[in-house]
Structure formats: C-alpha cells, structure tokens
Image 1 (cartoon, rainbow, N blue to C red):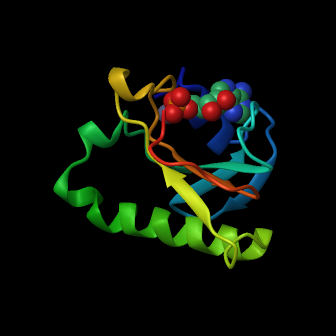
Image 2: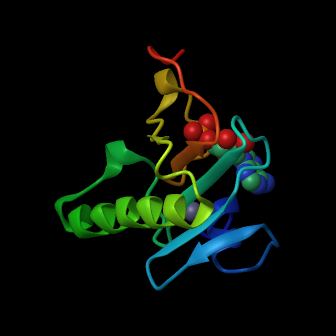
Length: 114
Ligand code: AMP
Ligand code: ZN
C-alpha cells in the first residue's frame, strides 16, 4: 500500500532506525519506546493486521517470530527475557494498520498487560 508509513520504511523511502532486514522482513526501533529495547518487526508485504492473516501467511508469520528471536539474541536480551506483542484491531490498541510485532525487553514485564 503506497501511503502506508511502515511500507515506506521497508522500501527505504522514509529513513528510520533499521535493526534488521531480509527478503521478507524488516525491523526498526519504535519512535516511542515502552522499554529499553523496543523494536517493531514487520513483513515487507502489506498485511493490515493479524485479523487479515490468510493461510498463505503461515510461513511468513513463523519467519517473523524467528526474526524476533534472532534480534533478541543480538540485542542481548534473550537470556533475561522479553515480550512479543501483536496488537490486533481497535480493542487491542492497534494504531498502525500494517501488521507489526513489538519486541520489548531490557526491563521486567508485568502481567496482566493493560
Ligand atoms: P500499535 O499501537 O500496536 O499499532 O503500534 C504502533 C507503534 O508504532 C507504536 O508503538 C508507535 O510508537 C510506533 N510508531 C508510530 N510511528 C512511528 C514512526 N514514525 N517510527 C517508529 N515507530 C513508530
Ligand atoms: Zn504497509
């Protein structure tokens, strides 16, 4: 989708703090971090939300989780622990409608989430 901010990041049309990229995934630092490490992992393909996920996206979603785990190792937060969040649609507080996983770490997380 041409007017999508996250698509523009992934195409390098707008600069951002890139953490990782490959053929299918792109990751960058959140502009409003909620933890010492707060990275967003997105598919290059524009998928609006998890609610729009189709069977053909199963492999892609697995890949995005692998990217989360790999970035967590590189950032040095894997042993201590981290949280992966996927806000989906309005009630969950999704504000950008290009599917993204939040990778949060570097502090103790609480449960239940707000
Ligand atoms: P969500 O509320 O789950 O849709 O998450 C959207 C996330 O995108 C929020 O954590 C925002 O801080 C982040 N965000 C919004 N605009 C930007 C931007 N220009 N660069 C980096 N992160 C952004
Ligand atoms: Zn997009």
